[in-house]
Length: 146
Image (tube, rainbow, N blue to C red; front, top):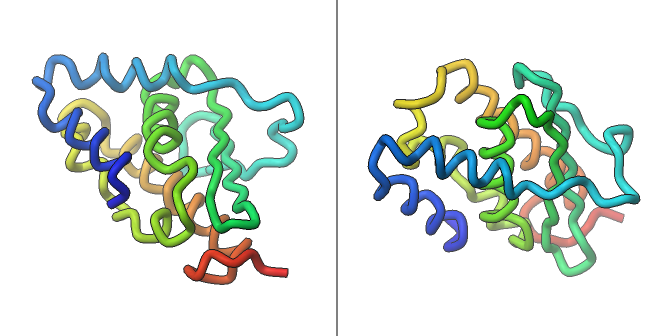
């Protein structure tokens, strides 16, 4: 797993159960708004999420991924997970994104705090990111598809 993401997973794992939700909410509050040149129309909706959730994962010419998310404020756990992904994977290489374990969040101890339905939505978000990356690059060599 990418070191930046592993550090976040470790932070959650080492925190007492009573503080994990607050850490997740801190990530939710730190999720930046969309850039002015981006709106939901240019993003993919993750239909498996219980709330309207949108993602884009452009790959630049050097093979690095940038993540942008749009989730309503009334979905703090989903926003928090998006914040974790943004901090842990933005700037990652295509390979780093594709090699991220689909259930990495289980190491964060979130299954004790979040419903199985929301956990499935979290897995769907990462799966959608990976699909977007593969669509742009054609695989894991990081070269954009032309």
